[in-house]
Length: 252
Image (cartoon, rainbow, N blue to C red; front, side):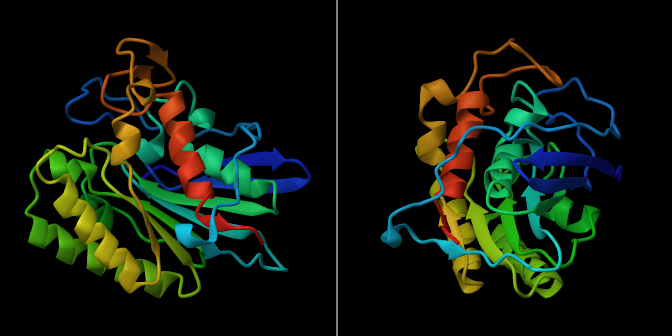
């Protein structure tokens, strides 16, 4: 596991990025990228909308007085932001930047391209003390045909571990990045929803965003870790995911 640390200044808030991941290509994408350790200054990103309708199902964050709010991201290549033009245009960085406008935040993460839920669960220690956990897992389980019942059990067990590590964390669970018509999209999303709701979290569907052609491709465009494909979200897709996440976080 390669640790990277970057300090982000968002308005007057100091945002610390602590990545606990290695970044590799999805098996279908090929062309692996080497793990890197880097320090960078990250821009604030777009002025994402924070508020949403009360019936949208929101979580309310409480900013600690003595230290930054810790944001925990867990996922695969979407969370790693591989096919965004830069890492700063990934949904992870955009969410961190959006919340950084409201107070000091610290980003930590367990994510790796190509990893299924169980790969992430067994491959990383879960950081403690998070105030918000954003879990984006299941797409590679869909691609590799993990049994739905097995996935549901693994997802429940993983969220149990996340809750044990951060008992006070609010939870947002992203669905699989796949078309609604895909045979098992609904089944895996149902498993994610059930596991998330069991911990008082909120589910965010991605299938509608996947179904918007402008959110993917075009294949071959250069990005920060190679070239874009036609499956993963592009910058517009990452911005749409970030907006969906931020809209489910109630104003403080």
